[in-house]
Structures are given as structure tokens and as C-alpha cells.
Length: 377
Image 1 (tube, rainbow, N blue to C red):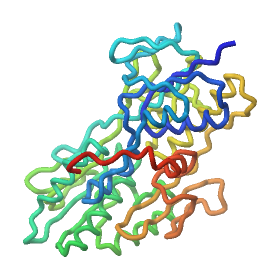
Image 2: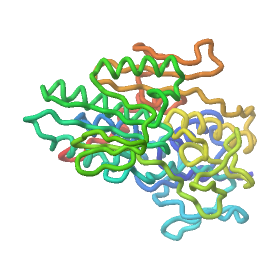
Image 3: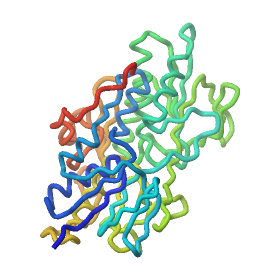
């Protein structure tokens, strides 16, 4: 009997975590192909430090990871799925047959506040960094960081603000740092207790936070608000609203995201799973993508015949707020006796932005997979 052929589409956090989980729970049971657009892998949360003047974000050898796990790497993109024939069509026109398919493509950067500088991770690092570097040094300048109502995961906004404020202080520059967000309270997704701690912390750094504010546009050196009034700003950096890739042949919601059940199975399609930011789940965050990937991996393993009981997705939200000094750890776990927590000491193992699962530990124990920064970075 031949091994089950699994195609994993994507080259990000969810896809790598799923490969690690499958290697753990069903070793040798699957003939796995990783369909990814390139040979490098960079966890998106690492880019906030680079954008605000820090060291280049870590990048890893995806081909090396695939080789280590005995996975075939196909450098291409997913262009469509023929679920009836169980095959994928790639961007170059190739067809890859599968018995099972895991889609972990991530989200795409969608609409951004008109007139603002977009920050959507690695692709925008150079632009944001150049804008901050170009601010005048002979006067007090204002930097505004904005999350509109369509942005569910706002932690990168607070990372950017805290790191920008810390960099200005270290350089002896006068800067006013402002956060404008539609949230009712800072990082309220972590619960009230954590949000209250975050609010006090960013205030102690001299950062002004405008909550419950809908930004409308940027023009003439001002950030205009939908409810009236404006904020003076020399630079405005905004997070884009995420959109899904809308893969032909797969069901998607109105924004291009794939609906899944609690085991990561794609609604109405046999032998297809999805995990991470490509799914219709509202929060797009690395730690949640890891948990979704683990759920999908165990479900796929059980489907393929492994003696494992798949567990439904029951998320625990963890976040690491970078402050320029000691980070702040945030957690929301409704089933815990402390459902909303914030602390300056670790609330989980490993000091990593992406918590949970196997990914952080794997990268930490395989330093040989880390790529050298590009020349001139």
C-alpha cells in the first residue's frame, strides 16, 4: 500500500508547523510535498524590530527544513484546486496530484488608510524604516501608528510604537508617538486585565493612545478622523486590512478566506484542510496559526490511518509586546483561572514572538538553518 500523498501549500508559519506536527505524530505515514513560492522562510512578527531601526529580521532556509523533514519542496504557487480530481494547479501551470491537501497560504495585505505608509511585514520594512530615518532631527516630530476597524490583530501596531519611542529616546531625539485605533481599549482582544496593563505601560513610555477612533485619511500633515477632528503627524504608518487569496476551486467567504470546521477541514470539500491566516477565522496571528496547523495535522494524520485522536481547535491567545527593553507577555485563555493576563516574566516557554506548538523550539535548536542577512542589510 502506497503512502498517502499530502500536498501542503504555503511557505509560512502554519505550513512549517504542520510539517513538524505531522513528522511528530505520523512519521513515515505520508508522502509529503511542500508547495511554496520560495526557498526562504521568515516569521512575520520579527520584522517590526527591523522596521524601527533594529537588526534584520531572522530568515530561515525552507529548503533545509524540507530536507530535514524528508519533504519534497516544489517552488511554485497555488493557482487553483480541482477537488473532484484531487489535484492542484500551480502558477507555472503544473499539476500536482494529492490524496490530501492542506492550504496554509496566509492572508494578503488589503486596503490601507489613504495617504498612510503601509506596514504588512517584510515587504514594507524598507519603506517604513526610511520614513522614520528621514524625520527631522532639529525639531519635535510626530509619528502616528494606525489600525482601522477592519484590522483584528493590532499587536504589531503597539510593537512599532513602543520600539519607535525607545529608539528616539536612545538617540536623544524629540518625538511624539501616537496610536490611533478603533479598539475600545489597547489590545482589548486579550481581555480587560491585560488591556489595562498595556494601557499603563504604553503611557509610561510617553505614547498617546486614541482608542475608539476611526481614521479616515492622511493629508496636509494631518491624520483626519471620521468622527471629526484630526491629529498632526509627520509620518503615519497603518496596518492594512487583511484579505484572502480566493483560491479557485475552494469555497471562500466574501473577503476571499476559506471556511473551516473545528478540525481545520474545509467546508463541503473532501480531503482538504486549511490553517492559519487563509481561513475565515477573524484573528490573523502567528500563535493561532500554529495551533490551527497542529489541529489540522492531527486531523490529517487520523484520516490517513494514524492511531491518534484528533482534537478540535480550542485557541489560547498569546502575545509578546516588544517595548525596547524587557518585553511584556500577554495571554487570554477563557478556560484558565486567570483568563486575561499580562506579565513582565514569561507566561510560556521560549522567549519567542510565535508561541506554542513546535516551530519556535525547532528553529531554536537548528541554528544552521538560519540564513545570513542580505548584503547591506
